[in-house]
Length: 511
Image 1 (cartoon, rainbow, N blue to C red):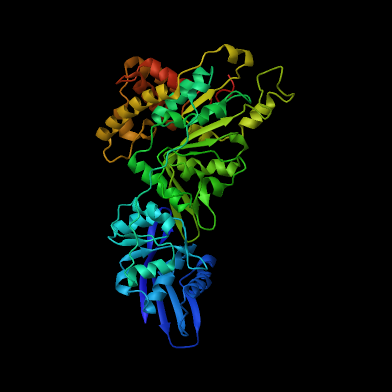
Image 2: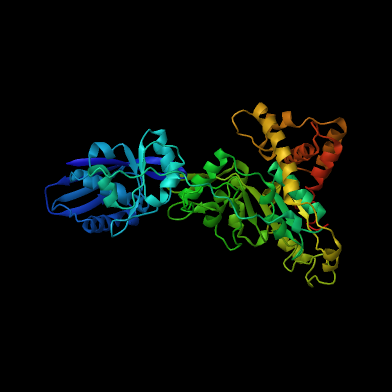
C-alpha cells in the first residue's frame, strides 16, 4: 500500500510543496528514505521508529520506502519527521488517509512521541491557507499558525494526541493567535544632549527611510544615536508585520507564536561573516540584512567589517532583496533595510585632534577611510560628522526633544509620502522617498528655479554620480516634507547637499 501526505520545503520565505510517499511492500524488513534527504531528514527514520514504539506501535516487518517528491530537490530540516510518521501511520491503517491528505503537515518528533517546534510554521500556514488546506504543526506553534487565518489548524502536543483526534473522537482545541509582541521600552532621544546636527540628520533619515553614516571620535554618541532611531519610526503595519514575522519564522526566531510589531533592529559584530550578514550556511538561512527587513541594520565600526561582507551589502541596499546563490539553486529573502553605520575617522579615532591623534596622522586616516569603497558610500544618502561633546558641556546643555515629539513629525512626513506614492505608484512598490526612482522621483520633486540652479552648480562642482544626484533629490524631498512644502526650495537642496560632502576623493571624512 502507498500513502501520500503533504508537507513543504522552504526556498527563502516561499514554500515548495513536497509529496511524502510511503510504501509498504514485501521483502526483507527495511526503512529507506529517498528523494535527496539531508542528514537531518535521514535521521528521521530513527526518530519515527522510537516515537511509534513510545506510543505502543511497532513498525510492520515489511520493506518501508519513503519518497520525498520532487526527488531532484534537496530536502533539509527536521520538520519532515511528522509528515513521514503520518504517512506511515496512514499506510498501516492507523490514521484515515482521506482526512490527513487535507492538511499540510510539519513537525519534529521526540523519542517519546512528543512534537517539538520547527522553523517556518507561519509561511507554511499562509501557503496552506492559499491552497485551501489545513495545517498540522506542534502545539507550541499553534498560535503562530493561527495568524494565517486558516480554518483548519491542528496543533497536537504529541503524536498520540493527533491519533486520538482522528480515531477516538478526542478533538484538539483550535489554537488562537497570541497577542502580538511589542518591544520593551525603546531608548529615548531625550537622553542625547547636544549633537543637534546629528539629531536633525537622524530625523531626516527616519522620515524618508534614508541610509545614514556617522563619523566621529570614540565616545561622541554615534551608537547612542543609532539605538534611538527605532523610537522615531512608526510601528509595523499589518502587512509589514507579516513580512517580517515570516522571515523570523523561517530563521526559527519567532517564539511563542507572537508576531513582531516593532521594527527590527539588528547590530551584528564587525567580525560577522558574509553568510551571517547576507545569509547562507547549509540551509541558506536569512542573514542580518534580511532579519532587519522593514527595520534598521546598524553596523558599528564600519571599516572593521570584512571587505567581502561590505561589498555584498551593495546589492541588497539597491534592490531590497538578498540573493544567496548556490550551484543548483538561488534563494532570495526580502531585505529592504535602513542602513545606519558608524565609524571613527581613523584607527585611533582622534584624527584632527592634535592633542590626542597618533603620530601617523593624517596618513592613518586616509588608510582607514580607504577600506570603504566609493560605490558603497555612494549608496548611503546621509553622511554626518558627530564631534565629541565635553563632559563640561554635558552638564550645561539642556535636554533635547523626546522621541515622541520627533516621532510625531516623522509620522506626519511619512503620511505625506504614503499619500503621494499611492497616487504616483499604485501597488505599494514605493513607500518612502528613499525608494522613489525614475519617473516617480521626477514627478515627486518639483523644484523652484533657485533650487534647480543650486543643484546644477553643485552637481558639477561636487562631480556627483547619477546615483548621488538622485539621492540628493530624495533627501531634499524628505526635508521639504518635514517642512510641509510641496516643491523643493533652495534651502532644502542646500541641506541635502551638505549630507553628501563626505564622498571619497572629494573631501576628507573629517571637516
